[in-house]
Image (cartoon, rainbow, N blue to C red; front, top):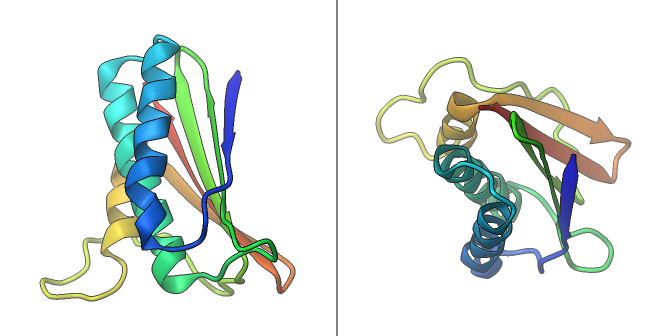
Length: 130
């Protein structure tokens, strides 16, 4: 698998640029257009979730890691909070919901997992098959 590691500043202002960098990298490496679109959607939603609900890592960033092969793209976003007891949403949030929509969307393109590493970090990952 090939890998891209980004450490944008924590906050909503870095979401678009980080998504663009992911798309450019996947496209340049021959990842299919449909898989790239799904990875872009997942990355944007995971980054937005970290910006709204998470905290920065000690250096003020979040960690974005993408790994890909011809058959799969895996996008992970790590922030400085711990989402204890969180599970990926199984159903669409009700109309007007103010939380859960982004992770539900990300879970529609791939398998979403949430892992808490002690009190200091949460990693949300979406594994997208071809």
